[in-house]
Length: 451
Image (cartoon, rainbow, N blue to C red; front, side):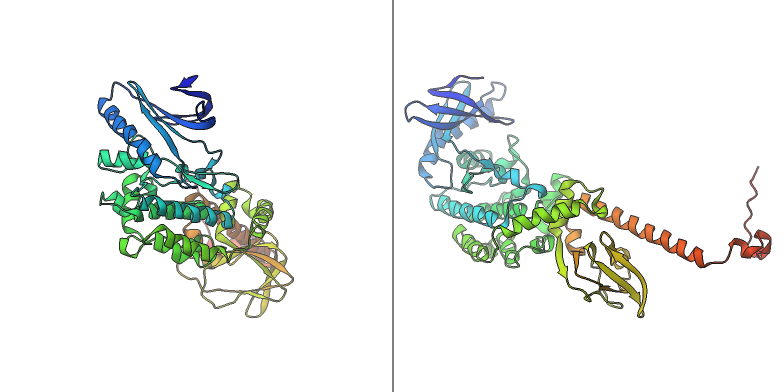
């Protein structure tokens, strides 16, 4: 490993990407630890080397203009014959992309607080005349005190200016998933494009998925430009309803209807944050996960899929003698009995009783056309019911949808088999008691094998 980069003494490697390596170093003059991003200038790509040289020459000036508690400071930028490096504030934090998967989501109040601070930081940067253009979870570090630090400001701005397109498409920086429609179209940009990207980050931190997904970049770009943003509360019914209009507005495709600045976005987030119950939800989520993990319905689900299922379901605590589903109603809602028991009846006559682990209401959900309830379901005792909203399930990952379909189909087949067994117990002996000869000729099966 390199022992010194310029005057900076290397302590250890912090990270390595496709084009750069970041080292923790000590600045002997200032007596502080710094992060040094080192890029080798390959002679085999002279054009890229020239672009990087222009980038680094401008980088230190950008760093001096951005002095904000939630933006990583840039102290120095050096271009040498075969390499270039940026000297930045060292942040002992974790990239937000570590909390963007469904099994590792941060509590709601922490997410809102982090994005709130980022919105104000972007507002400050824009007032200094700087647009980031590459806001994504990997470019936001979070300390143990939930203080976010946005990094790579100058890198994004200058590469975009030099290349005539967004940095997300070059140097292996990432994907267009966080880019605004106007950014994809290569239109002139302002602060609103960074707010859109921050809105995508917020969406992902709250749901564990991106608002627009596809199997290839061309389809993804089409959806970002043309499709409506999914309802975040449909994906996670446990979120405050006030979040839906905020997400809709920050991800608005029409620039005129999007938030005009970061301060406006932050103000709306602050209003929602006051509605949030702090740590209670964290404890409940962990306990609920353990309960679902033990239910037979979720036996074939991966842990991450159980977490996602928990996000798209509503945990309902019901008293006894509560009508859960009513015969004749049209609804595709279904769910799983976590505890307690229910009675299923048709025309006032009991057909069965179901207990913890059983599925309720799946027939109306699975039927391709008829969603009318064929039976009523009433709780017999205090019952916990995991309610699944079909609209939320339809927006979940393909893996979770497939798990639900297989688990529901297995339950239906098991019940059909049980129904057949009970009918057989009440039925006449096969062949009317006299064997196959007693059957009418039209009902006989020809089992003769063909030669």
